[in-house]
Amino acid sequence: MRLTLAFAAACTLLAAPAFAETQAELLNQGPPKTSQMLPDPGHIPMIFGKDIPWKGESGERSAALFGDPSKPGIYGVLIQWQPGHNSRPHFHSTDRYIYVVSGTWWVSSSTHYDPAKMYPIPAGTYVTDIKNTIHWDGAKAETGPCVLLLVGEGPMTSARYVPKDSTKDAEGQDFVPDTKK
Image (cartoon, rainbow, N blue to C red; front, side, top):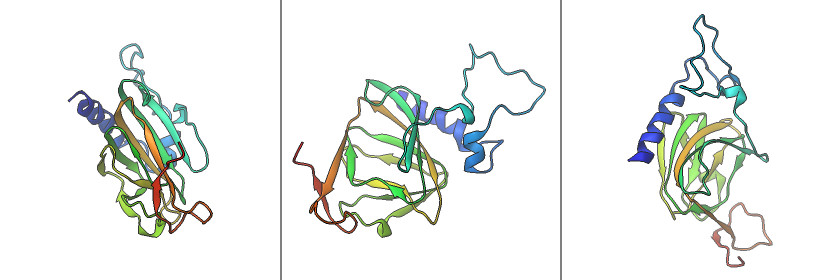
């Protein structure tokens, strides 16, 4: 229940950004121009899109909004996938709740890594990532970047799968659990 309420509150804030029409505007916006005073940050703390601290490269960036996935308790993270980048088959140890804030998110629940067979999930869609179930995801070049709001309860760990034949290109291969760990 606590996790559902936290997710609902976070989605409400991101679902319909009143002053942003594009993903770039959403991520780079500052305080709106208004004659009203900014609320007391001791009562209503806020971080505008331009001030959110993003980390990462190689096509996937993340920004921790609250909590920490590696520690006990609720966490919330923004994920941004750049066009043409995606993960490889993997799973997580806890359920995760995802809202597609902008763009189209592409997913697969297969151990066969073939980006041509990913399923498109449009902005405004809510998804549950069920624990211990294989998946992979990202953004396709033809549909542009996507931003996700991901909420879960830690501690959470991820387990990556590896190509069945490490001497060949990953695309088109089946992935298997990594037994070399």
